[in-house]
Image (cartoon, rainbow, N blue to C red; front, side, top):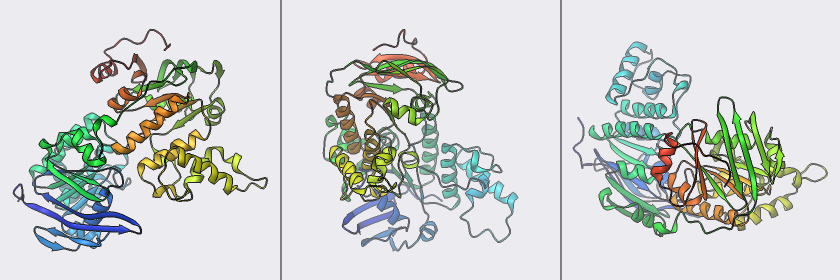
Length: 507
């Protein structure tokens, strides 16, 4: 039987946690009620991840206590959290790809005997998915599931364990709008069953669409807890970073120079075709479009990772042939991937090693050894220039916050001294404060005369940071618009194929 709405299931009282010199949490209190979706907001480094780890038994608090149904508990391990009905799901679902859907759902069960009754397991798995209103083939391997289906699988796994508290960490970051709607339908079904849900996200629109209450952390401290109806995006941001909404998404006027990058009829079979545009020195050309528009494919072609098989590319008026990233770098083109964790950085290496990696030959001695002094000097210059927050460039890059990791990615490619900078989702997964810093860097790079291509799924970002906007749909160029006066509605109209293709490729 579901708990009555409003009853606290899990209470966090006065919890503190220190890691060395870092005070990750300082006297934080939070109550999660049955049948409620409670959003937790905060910048990277605000303490959200530490709070999750303490709640799920991964870390132990230095002070404070946890209560379940009003009784103090010690959550010493993930198994004890599971026993108490506390589960967490993350942006990257943790599934076993070679096991079936049913096996993934019941992988954590220890009460089903030594011999697996596969028929019963499949029936029970189907029953759990039916409760969520989801239809999956429970006998098929999980390998072929979409990210959205994998997240559904994680929820089904938690439900099978009689979850009472479900922590959802950035669950919508990799989902399309349609997939987000489906996920929210499932989350609301859990709420109706009396599950207490802690919803953590940087996407404000998602938070305000689904949350009942909102708590904000800043620098490891509790700032506010209010009903969602009493919170606005502006007030939430002010609580998170101590600044107002007007301080974000700003560009300053830039004097545009001569054309730097000219693309004529670019195409790759099966991906995109007929892409034509020009980017001038000091200009930011935004690339917009819905999921499946193939914007990233254009960026990969221009950087030679997945080369185009049609069309022409000119840099500073000279035709260039781009067959691989080395060709792109020689032409003065740099590209930052949308996936900084998997593709943008080498986490075991230092900040300095990551920054100098693309141009490593410049930092080698005659014997082929890395000249640490030269490497450190280059890294320190970018540390100062981009305000990377770290005590030393010899620190492992994995120790940095998401925003500072993104600054290292930018530094890595700025060190190649590009003429054209392609930025693919440069603020994905960053909090509003870190986003503002990246936007400031983009603005400064434009003032330095770089030609910038900005690929982003966030319409407010595209509208605020771009001089012009190229809209794509399913590999086709639908429109090129001057950003002044353009609305989100007009961009969506073009992205859905309701606007004529551009007549020309010029600025």
